[in-house]
Amino acid sequence: MNEQTSTVKLTLKQWLTVDAPQSRFQAKCGRVWLGWLKFSENKLAMIGLSIVIGLILVTIFAPVLAPYDPLAADLTQRILPPGAEHWFGTDQLGRDILSRVIYGAQYTLLIVGLVAITAAPLGLLVGTAAGFFGGWIDAVLMRITDVFLAFPKLILALAFVSALGPGIENAILAIAVTAWPPYARIARAETITVRKEDYIEAARLQGTSNFALIIGHITPMCMSSLVVRVTLDMAGMILIAAGLGFLGLGAQPPMPEWGAMVSDGRQFLLEQWWVATLPGVAILIVSLGFNLLGDGLRDVLDPRGGCLLYTSDAADE
Image (tube, rainbow, N blue to C red):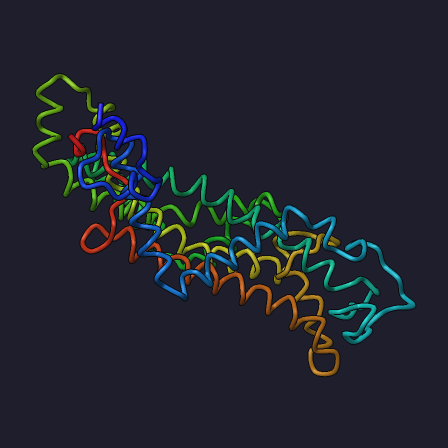
């Protein structure tokens, strides 16, 4: 009875940091808490997290935050410098640049999100299959991966978009196609290491199928490295998307995409600097935020020195 009473009186922090967790769920929550404590000690990582959260909030509340319609043109207000009425000035068509930058965050987050949820699972699937089965399956899948890795991402994305036609949908598809090979390499390396562990052999002796082994035991062990790599690659995805928009192959006018805005303002760069510079600053800040966030996650999720948050059930046991 006394033991039950003392358990009830535990604070949340004590429950998370108890030396002897009473359940697997409690142990996982404790690992997450320790990971957060280590992450919060990194000031640069917290700045990166703040930037990413700010991007998400701006995307959600864009209709509230934008003072003007981002597509509304007013030639009487064209090329106005930053001031009280237009904080970021206006472009060559009299559109408010601040409103266009705010709405452009939606396209940036859309591109990053869709690429991450398509390229990462594809790379994880290819890498775990190659590492687990080995032999000719490994050879074929890795040679295909090597072909994609042989070309620079931007050049390959340009080729795909040129073939498919300009547009934000085709740009997202092209970036996703060029982004998955590094994830396959990481997943393969992790799988080769994990597949020889004792708990994998124990699960195999219990009759667990290859599919269940990959999904239930090997894939979770690859997640830490994959999450870090995806976060770090998001800055590159943003730059590639901006590059495609700059070349007119990404989002099409009048969509307020940051790369296209830089392209529209390059002819005014020397005299009306704000037209191209301010969207470029937005690209810089968001890319920096994802890089700082990725560095912080790498310190936390590194299985060799951080708090490993992803483990399989068999490994926990």
